[in-house]
Image 1: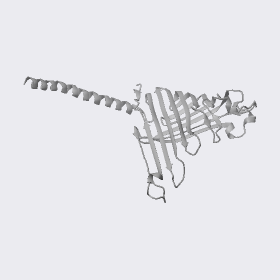
Image 2: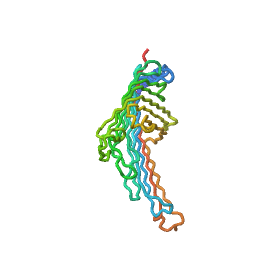
Image 3: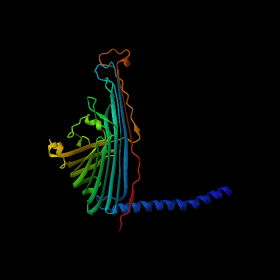
Image 4: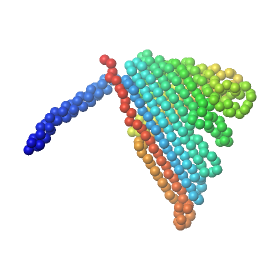
Amino acid sequence: MTRYVLSILASAALLPLAAQNDVDTEDRDASAAAMQAALPPDTIPNGWQRSGIFNINMTQVNLTNWAAGGFSSVSGIAMFNGTADWKKDRKAWDNSLILAFGGQHIHNGSGPQKTDDRIELNSKYGYELKKSLYLAGVFQFRSQFTEGFNADGDRISNFLAPGYALLGVGLDYRPSENFTVFFSPLTARMIIMNDKTLFGGSTDPDLRVYGVKNGSTTELEVGGYVRMQYKRELAKNITFLTRGSVQQLPTQPTEHRRDLGDLVDLQGERVVRSNVEHGVDLRPRYQPAEGEPRRAALHWARHAVQTDLGYRPQLQTLTEPPER
């Protein structure tokens, strides 16, 4: 009897605490909603906003006496795309990192081949002059992980060969977190050539590879620069991203300007990203060759396995309440 009475008293004591927790939770939710409602449309909240996605795609195809022809192959690619953006009052700092590496091996007597190899770091810091208009500085670094070859097997690139480092100051127009345009009338770009073998042993002092003169390891170029980016989430886990940049190269000697590519540097990318979070998709397919007898079907077969793995960490967004 005593134990029963004590249980009732303990329950009665805990009920007010549980009710208070519910009240506190409702108050916090209401306060957060009020702060968010206080922000005008297309306003980027203060604090850090971080995101990242890591994708691995692997495909394997095995052909055994396949009537339609073709070669067995295996391919794969791994990519990381992360962003870390910070804003406080009139100051904003955007950072992004892209790492990608992929290759394939076709069983036709040829060796493995790269399909992607990229290192790209972007950073932009700005101070708001007026609504949506910032005085900003940008930094960009681009290179690759390993050496690259052309179709003839000749080495044409390597880590830091070339490598690009860009630094500029200009105006950044960003009406929302989805769209931004940066313009700089004066931007410096350094080209790095850390592999002398790419000059092919030539002694010609006027020979240039990726804009770097023979005998040098760097080349400095100064000119105007424009970069645009637009992104939008079309649906859950599906994001559309397009970006491009144009840089004028007025400091190159006139005798080396032969076409538009010697006057401007154009870059562009348009991507629709779709990923399955924490998912693995294995799709084996077996099919006997057409016109072949059904006996020993696996002797005339096509076997394909594709694995897609996407991981998007749940990164917490740290925000600050707007100043009153």
